[in-house]
Structures are given as C-alpha cells and as structure tokens.
Amino acid sequence: MTTGRQRRRPAGEQRPQRQGSAGGAERGGAERGGRRSPPGAAPPPPPPPWSASWTSPTAARAASGSYVFRLGNTVHALVAARRTTQLPDVVPRVCLTASNLTRALYFVCDTVLWLKSVGLQPDIDAPKWRNWATKCYYFSLLMNLARDWYEVSWRLEQAVQEEKIKENSSWDKRNQELNCLKCDGLHGFFLLLFQILKNHPPLVLDMVKNLCDLSGPLDTLGIYKTNPGVIGFCGLLSSLVGILTLASPHLKLKQ
Image 1 (cartoon, rainbow, N blue to C red):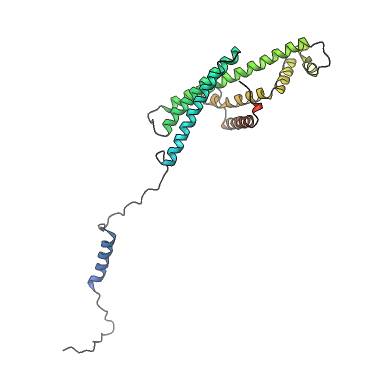
Image 2: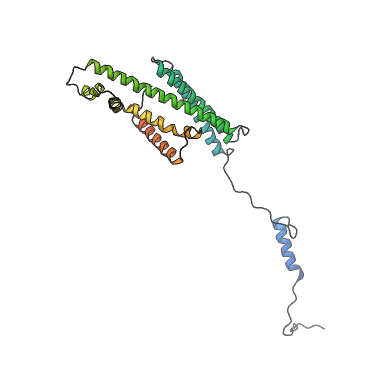
C-alpha cells in the first residue's frame, strides 16, 4: 500500500538512470547532423586549399597578357626588320635586318616555351626549343656587335681623313688630339679610339649593353663558361644601360 510520502533511499544507493535519455540525445544529434558514420570509420578529409592556376580568372588574364606581350615583341621585331631594309649603307642594313629577324625568331621560340609552361602544349620538347631560342638570341647580339664595330671603324676612317685634310691647322683642338696618328704602333690607334668613343656616348653604351648581354648565351651554349655572379653582374649592368637610354633617348644609338 502506497502512501503520499516518498520512500527515503538508504545511504549509498544511486538513483537509477533513464536508459533512453543518452541514446535519444545521440539519435537526435545524428538526425540533426545527417547520416551517422559507422563505428571505426575514418573522418572525411578536409576540403583542399584554394590554389591559383592558369584556369582561374586572375591567372587567365595574366596568361593572356603575357601572350599579348610576346606577340607584341615579335611584331615589333618584324617591323624593325622591315624598316632597316631601307638603310642606305650595306653593312648596317644587313646586320640590323639579320639582328631583328633573329630576334623575332627568338620571341617565337619563347612563345612556344610559354605554351609549354602553362600547359597548353605539354608535349613540346622544351630543351630543344630553349636551345634554339638561345642560338637566335646569340646570333642577334653578334649582328649588333658587328654593326657597332662597323660604326667604330667608319668613324676611325673619318678621323684619319679629317686629320689629313687639316694637318696644317695648328689651332684646332681636335687636331691636336689626333696628332697621335703620326706615331706608329698601337699607342696612336688606341688613343684615337678613345677620343672617338668619348665623343660618341650612344655608341659606347650600345657596345657595353651588347657585350653584357652576350655573357648569358655564351655560358648556356657552352662556348665560354663563367659563374652565375658574372652573369648576374652583366645582366644588372645591361639593365642599367637600358634604363639610362630610356630616360635619355639621345643616348640611344640611332638605327
């Protein structure tokens, strides 16, 4: 017979737990979270981090800009080659036209290597095209140096003729500097060469830039091996000369 007063439990006796409370909570969490994975299964891997590729919009715009830049360099070299075919002197016409044409071929090879690097043409033989690009660049620099040497020799000849015409004039300062031609040997030649280069800074800068750019192809083709420090210094000097000629267009050698 039960009474309204609740029976007191003895000391040490625990209250019985409800069996369905914990299981119901787990089932409720599983129902709210979706399907529950079986016991012992590995958790799903986290989503991969985002990485830029040429298929992303930003990289695609950069790739398109790089392609347009290379195409513009090729067109510019071809236009320059067409312009140099109209030069009156034979030697500068041949040297500059050959230099611009080989420079255009260099940009074509560089574009092919770019297609390989972005994955558009993965089957391209990169070492072969890189070797062709280096050879085209090397030949273009040689043609530029040949043109520079022609300019130096032509100005040497002009100075010698001017010395012969004005050899009786003792008041001309330039004739006083060119009196070394009367001396035999290399001393007179180098002194006259120094005076010509001093009076024509664009020619000096163009020769320095071409000689600095020549260090890279010589090392790559195995013609003259050097260390990366020398190549880096030559590249820095060539860049400084290029910046100087851009800032001061009168220092750029006219074609």
